[in-house]
Length: 299
Image (tube, rainbow, N blue to C red; front, side, top):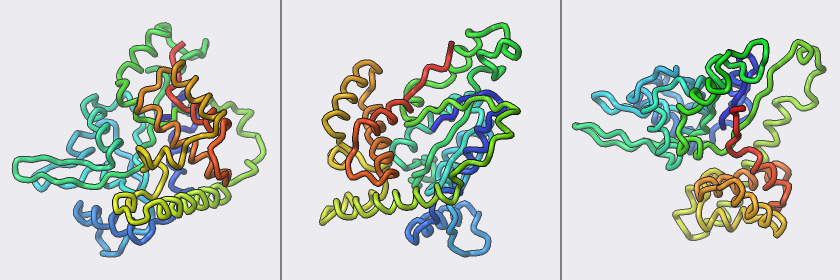
């Protein structure tokens, strides 16, 4: 997910709250997360970790810190975030080479650390959350606060992110500015506790679905969530109804969706249906999933 909005809109706060609506690690996940932490020298008490990790490295982090490396080829931030959340704030300020190195772990769920004395593959299945301002000054479109270089300022700033990297981000969300009047609004009708229950039900539904689909196929047993489904398995569980397929075909042509962009739409649509406890994927789910694809943020 990429959150795009002006400074002070709450992008970082939203990202930091995400672990609060995720369920605790199951025994298998807890063992994996704890083993990675142990290799990295961050398991001081010797106990299995039950809380999902939340990693928030600085945008100046090096390649070795992000992907892994050093003399002993230790795991990096992408592996320390396994089973949890990796949050990168000020995304365009990150080193371009480091950003491009994220493409492989985001897609494969693994981080390969190759050194002269070691060649290690660590698990790196995480939820990637990032945030950015629409331009360097952060106030694109604001006549009072925006700089005099708009929209060129925004174009130069956003060009730091490559198309292949953006294509691997399933959801692009515009976060509007928060006014003083917004602070006086009544509390939300649904809090984190209620949202967490819906998320837990949806994840349990997915787990049972893929356990049933696995059968005697050992390759499917590793799939727990929609985010991990691909190929024929994804098509079997996420193919929309006729109206949904028609909308998806039409949108694919107009939005010039690549094959890499097509499958995330199916995954997000299937997840939206699961959150509603819907057995099938319908047009409304496809429409919402399409609305989260890459947005035009300049202009």
